Amino acid sequence: MKIAAKLFWTQQWPFWLGGLFVGLAEIVFYIGTDYEMFIVVTTGFAQMFAVSEQFLFGIDWVGRVYEPGIHWVIIGAVLGARLVAVAEKESRAWVHYPWRMLLLSFTGGMIFSFGTRIAGGCTTHHFLGGIPAMSIASWVVLLAGIPFAFLAFMFSMKIGLGGHFRHQDTLEVAKRHCDDRYNPNPGYVPTYKPLLDPLRLLLNLLLIVFFAMPLYYAIFTYQIDGGIAELGWNIAWLMLSGLLLGFGIAKCGFGTECSVMAPEAVFSKPSFYIKRGVPYSTYLMFRSLLPLQGFMVAIVVFNLFLMYAWTSGFGLMPNAVGEAGDAGLYWGHILGGPLLAIGAVFMIGCEVRTYARLGLGYATALAALPGFYIGYLPYTFFKEQIDAVVFGETLTYFITIPEYLAYTFGSDEITWAWGYSGLIIAILVFSFVSGWRFLNVSFPDLLRQNTDQLVCRSLYGEDADAVAGESVPEAT
Image (cartoon, rainbow, N blue to C red; front, side):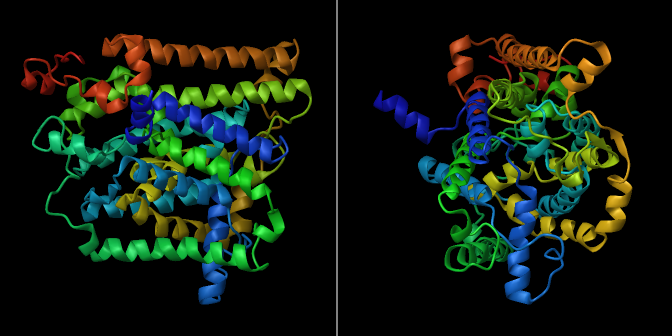
């Protein structure tokens, strides 16, 4: 039992277990907001930027729209991920990224943060909150973004950065495969000294300021939104939600971007990835739908809790349109989905995964942070004009899919809602069965082994050169 507990804390987890923690984080947040809303983080991020603006520089570029404040879920998520680094005794500061990858992450941060304003929320908001809540808007954001996520991935491969797209970096695996041309680990550079990297030191300074300013004003003053004097013990719920979120994501590399891209690998050949510098292990991870397993566990767990709360009468089914309004769909959701998808791929992680990567010490997450700030500015400077275009016309007043189906085809909304739950459970089961069959492992191994253990069992079979051709090597 002690050995199992030690491995639980000191090793990476399978995706499904990280997804379970994400689902639990959503439930905790929902309870903490009096059974009304799922996790929202993007506006909180803007509010935290506004604190530094006002009290350091006396400007209100972001603050003209978003009141200076603190978001305790974000604090908890970064702290939870940092606890993973402590438990595993491995910060990811050792991962070295070339300037092109850092620039891509910075650009991704700008695109993503602007996309959150257009889409009425980030991918965490829509995919992990809106889809469990059966939101029409969230499904539109998802479907509109998928092809653009693939295009962003293609662009990243085209400029020679495919090797950096991994679910998670661990030093042990990187050392083992550092000379492996089919499973490259370009982030492992033995001579790299992060403490001597001036750019990394500057980005860390920005990170410290970004968190220290809101924490100081939230704890010791009454001057910002969300402070201790205002929220009191409610902060404990928000922090717990963030801790579960950050810990679960950091333990497996969970991210919405890789989760929704994984099914595309079913229609791809391994040579498509390998010839473009993407690790074969990444192809195996995608092809076995491991990220989708975590994604669907989080969605199903939260959806079933929402259904219980909603049908029991003590909770609401949240509306995922965000700050856009009270209807079910706007043009912003169609236009914002591609921006969220492109930005998430360029950052190697959606917004909430970026919080976890900040806690783990990834340089790409540090580079994305100032990009987030700049991405907010076009919206805060031209809010009225942008809102008139993206939120000015209502495309449908139906908020949820069951609501639309009940109106269109008859029967009651709750019956359609349970049918929706049955469908996402079926997708969850499919993802596990597909991964089990493709990897050819025992089902207990699929449940208890982490991603590296599953995809690195035997990457190439007897003939490594076959990987670059059209024949597919065995996964086991």
